[in-house]
Length: 323
Image (cartoon, rainbow, N blue to C red; front, side, top):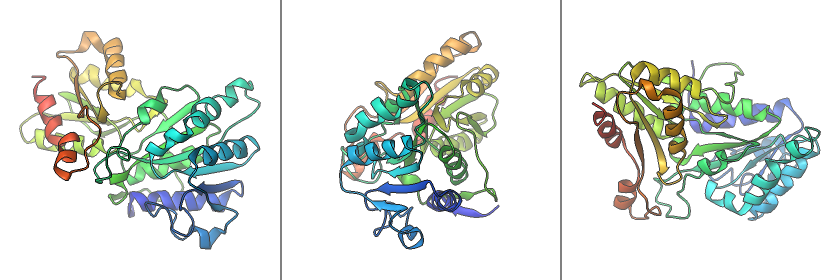
């Protein structure tokens, strides 16, 4: 299989969508002449022109609102926001319109919209640009929320999102764009709402999504050297959520740790943990562990930002507490 970066996998999939369907167009801030904040759409303007690659003003509510209207009218827009933090300026459009129009019209009006948003900390961008807010959106029926961790998953899930008739929030952790991995050849899709077992194990189930999956895999490899076999499950999709895969694993391993980058208070990990207790309580040999970020606005200083983000060491400590 060819090896490509997360960024290249996204760009390839978007380019294919533009080539295959005239209804697809991309709109956002600096996506044209500049090539995108994280260079995903570099070269697209020259290739597809201004009608398909639309640079927009710094007005997220207008960008998303325009995209919702275009989707309702039969087009298939892709919105790129500079960061998930800026999606707060379009939250009314996302939560009250994109998520609800299809339901409120009795299915007569579809909103086939993909909203791509970089997320997470680690880039020294300060408290207002380093949040992981995907759990907020996963709370809302009518939205689909996807957060791939590898180039292969980014490609397969984005292709599925682009073909979906519902609004999909596609969350891309900003530290993943340069990561590399094998990507299957051909135009393949990964169904939304299907978790993936990234590493098989028999003693503990580690559940995570997005960038922290990589930390969990590192932790699992190090723990294997100490004789602790850990199974790593990548949720990939927060809504719809595949708890069947999680519960089947927990029932086998009898121990679980949930890991995420955001804060514990109101974090999506709490939802997963509650569902584990509901579905596998009698199978557990220890309380479910939880690894999350520090309960502070993200610091700007490098040493403090590093201290605020969960690491493989934190995952290892949480796993060892279960024995």
